[in-house]
Image (cartoon, rainbow, N blue to C red; front, top):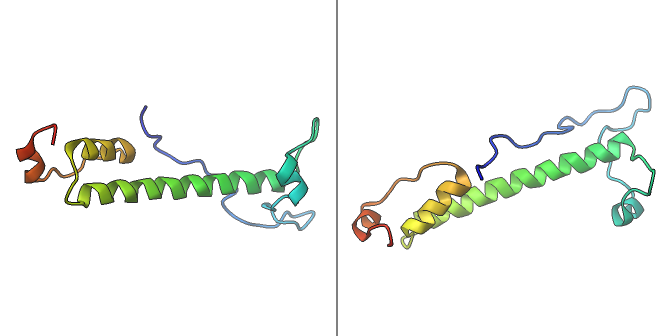
Length: 108
């Protein structure tokens, strides 16, 4: 499976609604966070926007963390060809092959 080329983006700009004056992103009360929406209940748009915005923030965090971790593996002195291949899959990029890895062969 290929890495998606774009992350989700939702309600990235915090602003007040013109009529109510409420923010377009508001954290739901604890009861809704604990139990979720009730049957036949529609969440207010600012709660839904808060959820989708924060889900995207976590996706960005995990994406960047995976890239940093994968890069650290390749940079480390013990990086094998298999580890370098894993990094390419995670990051969607090609890594520089060291002469040490080339001398060791594909199986490291």
